Image (cartoon, rainbow, N blue to C red; front, side, top):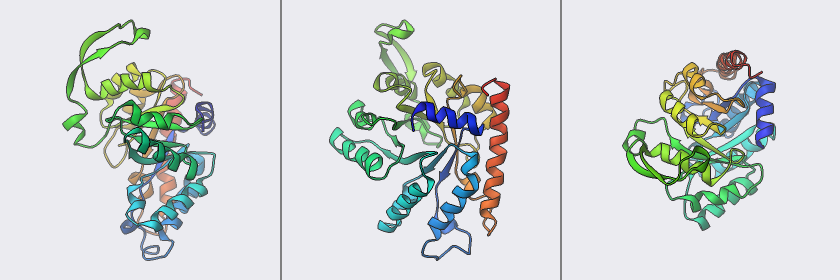
Amino acid sequence: MNRDNLIAQIKKKKSFLCVGLDTDESKLPNHLKGEKNGVLEFNKAIIDATRDLCVAYKPNLAFYEVMGSKGWDILQETVNYIGDEHLVIADAKRGDIGNSSNYYAKTFFEKMNFGAVTVSPYMGYDSVKPFLNYKDKWAIVLGLTSNIGAEDIQTKELNSLLSIGSEGIQNRQRWMQLYEHVAYELKDWGTNENTMLVVGATSPDRIEKIRNILPSHFLLIPGVGAQGGDLDMVMKKGLNSDIGLLINSSRGIIYASPDKDFATKAREKAIEIRVLMEKAMKDNKLV
């Protein structure tokens, strides 16, 4: 899915919701636990209940890899079931030397037909570049994550050399936090048509800083819902003229109920979020 298609879907649905398919076998409703295709049936029900309310799905690979080869089959069937109308993000957090990244990109983009992959930037540009060689595909780079441990590394200050002519900065050094440096690097690595940045919802003031660095890029925002991120504040700090946000909610939607009504309750939670998104888009004259 290219940028224009993504924006069109957002405006059509009045939603920039991404549903995280972090499907844990141990948390399936009782009637699906122990079933041969329990995880897949759960995913299909969630997808059917939310298709018209979201623009993206994000399976977290950890929940599928733990099941071995069966998990990979379920993941592929889930991707196939979603289809082409939504951006399908492999939450894989890959990042390795160029040769290895070439094969990661080939796996997710060619073999499995994902539209985007989350990648780590900490081995540098050559580890991200292979993901940028595919038309209408996205590399979603980890910038500032929503976990507590993000403070251990991502917010450390460094004296960074900038040479960003578009902002009138020529070889100037300044102190900044590491996640800011990653955002500046992203401007040179790709474009707003093939790269996004992950920014946790739990740090709205930092979202504003990143939006100033990347005014036209999409930001993937995890941490709304179960992790305590404030959706209204995220939208206030992060929206741009093209919306520019994908707000991910995983546990808050897919585990809205432990019973047979899980899909109905998931839909209700997705509607609650979508209503807030539509209001923000109207208030900011984006629809």
